[in-house]
View 1 (cartoon, rainbow, N blue to C red):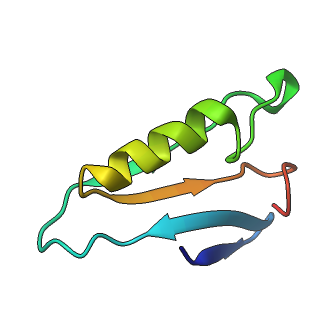
View 2 (cartoon, helix red, strand yellow):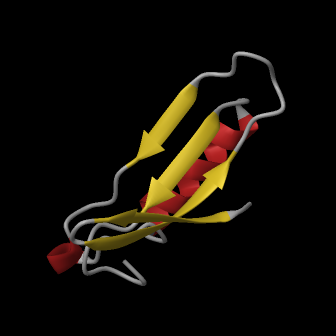
View 3 (spheres, helix red, strand yellow):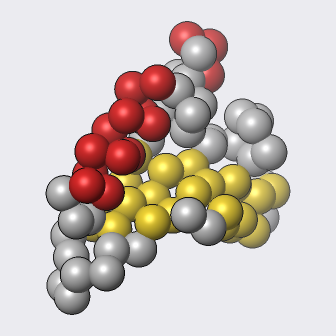
Length: 71
């Protein structure tokens, strides 16, 4: 699963992306809970949902909001 970095005017966002091998696969974008409540892209719920979508054949992106992890 490749690491992805989005560069922007306020800095960068760190993420992980899984591209489905299925043609025309649906896409899921995983957003983590608020960082003040332990939210990161590696949060247990986000991580579990990410892999559940992967198993269902989705292309999936999860990322850290600004100020979290390497974002």
